[in-house]
Image 1 (cartoon, one colour):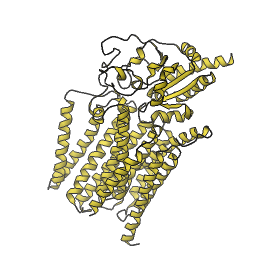
Image 2: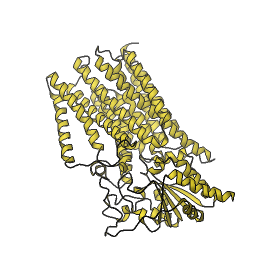
Image 3: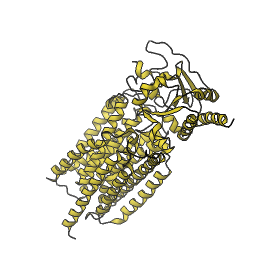
Image 4: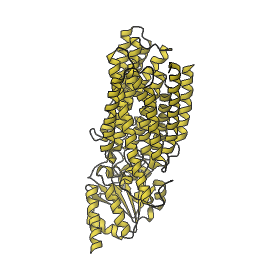
Amino acid sequence: MNAETRDVLINSAYIITSIMFVIGLKMLGRQSTARQGNILSGVGMLVAIVVTLLDRQVVDFTWISVGLAVGTVIGLACARVIKMTSVPEMVALLNGFGGLASLLVGAAEYLRIRGGTVAPEHPVFTLTVIALTILIGGITFTGSMYAFAKLAGWLSGRAVIFRGQHLSNGILVALTGLSGVVYVAAATPEVKLLAGALFTVLSLVIGWTLVMPIGGGDMPVVISMLNSLSGVAACAAGFVIGNNVLVVAGCLVGTSGVILTNIMCKAMNRSLANVMFSGFGAAPAQGGSETADGQSLGEARPISPGDTFAVLEAARQVVIIPGYGMAVSQAQHVVRELGHVLESNGAEVRVAIHPVAGRMPGHMNVLLAEASVPYEQLVEMDAINPIMPTMDVAIVIGANDVVNPAATRDKASPIYGMPIINAHEARTVICLKRGKGAGFSGLENQLFVMPNSRMLYGDAKGTLQSVIAEFKGLETA
Amino acid sequence: MDLILLFFIFTLAGFLGFELIAKVPSQLHTPLMSGSNAISGITIVGALIVGGADDGSWVTSVLGTVAVALATINVVGGYAVTDRMLVMFKKKGSSKAGNGGAS
């Protein structure tokens, strides 16, 4: 096979890959076809990998075989052992790896140009896109790693704000830009290499400082945005090596990520700029348990599992509102069981899911699916709010901001304007919470001190199990 | 000319991405994100080309190999974890007869 036919063959295969990605993504958007869609896109990826091995530039297979083998083993192992509650961390981690891979491709390509093995047709353009690949790949990598550390609880979820942050970030960006320009424009090879190295380090620092001032409650937005960036990084790498399939696939991921980010921002009624730069959730005192006119709403009143049982036993309409706390205490299976005993007791049970509940878009749905919570029990925010006043009991399990009534009435609150599930309109609200104090986002919740609210303190799984035990005792008695 | 062609593809793929993802039900957001995350591992193609090239320089080989390993973790882990999630959605759909699908 001569070089030209080989190129045609490879590029034809890349077209097939692109088609499979497009159709796969489309199918991922529908419940009935989602799994086949994911498999289709995986097969497309396999096709791309196999034909790339035929590329005439690829002559040495020892090293890449090692890389492929190691990566496959680690990737499969991670996907197998990960708990469903930890999916956001996993996505953040994988995302970071993708970003770093793109960065390394950019860096290696520069070293090849430097070494003279590759001579780009348009040197300035290629050097510029290499810089972009390194910048975006670097931001994706360190940003994702920071998000991972926050999600996994290795670092505090609270936003980190310090005096002069905007100034120091401004200087950082200016230095990065400067070193990037020097790297592209410098004529001396040594200066170019040094500037390139500095630029790489600064890009990595930017990713870190970008995610630093973003509070834990905004993680769904951050994860979507980083996901989008990892696509853009792959796309930029495609421009570096002049590869169609990288440009197409990277761009698809980039734009679809933008859409998801936008959906998340809308669900919180905030702009992306506001999420990124406002340092939301850094000051725990803001919008506390006082109304806008300074009146204290009162104390949170605790309730025992036994009394919770008494309330639930009499209830006919029950809505369960899960949040990240449910994931933390792995309570999704107990939630299914609770729904079951409540239904046996003659109550109608709904599970209301806020679009940004949890740490990534759709996080709660995954957990409830894992626990086989019946699909018809799930309702979205817009469907539950109009009928909330008819609910006898709302059980809030580890949700916080998404049920905080401050969002609807306290103009001083940083979450003012965010659409919430109106749990406070139910006749009785029972809030399950690990302990007193502000949630992951750092905000006090006005719901907890309302007259119709009762706090059921303790690990959600444990307290729910004791409530269920009371129901079971009732049945056997 | 090649460059213009790349930009052409880039623009069209961008619009396509916007169109594809609009109106996805919120319960599929997580699988969609981890699935598209796996697709962004396409950078593996670049990593293979860089890592498999014979430049006589060990530095690029090392960078390329690390890139291949990282991108492979991204690809394999991403598709596998997405599949695990979607199997659970399926299970839930089929456990209730007649409700196992379109929504």
